[in-house]
Image (cartoon, rainbow, N blue to C red):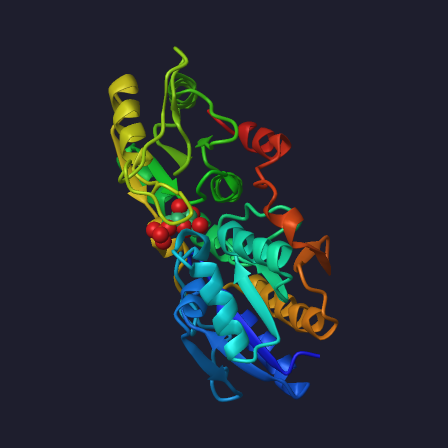
Length: 349
Ligand code: F6P
């Protein structure tokens, strides 16, 4: 069994990271292991930044958002000698196992290190986007969904008072999980997501139909990754800095809400406002569901380390926490199934 277990959190933070850190650490300490936090994701292994985690370090962190060991979007495969330095520092610290807590990017690196170098790694699926395959849900998603749903509820009352259309832009990158689920939960009148790109014209028609039925306010939820799509076939992805990408090649999305709101106002004549929820969806305390899921994932990850099940990831299937191959989790994005969008669409217009 590994005597020194390392932990890292990579990619965008999300509520529940500390709950995983606490669970992995507690169970590993109980088994007599030492636990080492790697600072700021893969950067900590590239630059040899470590901090020991003991009982005191994990005390009181269960309800805290963010991550006590920091995070970054560092990709060792994009840095000169990055992978060699990861391997060297891992060996030099006499680490026997790594628990990598992350989304497709962080776990993609973990999977590659395992396949190419036999790296002793176990993954835990994190992301508010819920776009990782091989698991029903990632932790962090429920909190983001709850924040977005509450925002939609709040926007309803102001929309109704002013007879306005309120456009809510939510995160989710290239999948529409947050948009569809918060839209269903909050009773959105139109939802636009990357997977089922209805046109701007269709969205406006739905709003007009609703107004003809006597409802003179509406809520539109748009996912940041929705490409503005027109009946002509024209499509535009709206990104904040089209030229800049991170080390994993992602553009910074955001801004589609503004453009869509202008389009709606011009095409329908209805006064329209936009709210961009942004990082509020990622901050703050995790929901009870996320705390429980993150805790169960963390305990399972410690068990996988003890059993030396390298190259695996903890996953949720139904109500059970199971192990799956890491490479299955990162092979493709988990998109919103059409039946979820169909359910939401029943209430459009
Ligand atoms: O992957 C999580 C996420 O919040 C996405 O929904 C969003 O597109 C991105 O991260 C934002 O990244 P950053 O924190 O770098 O602005």
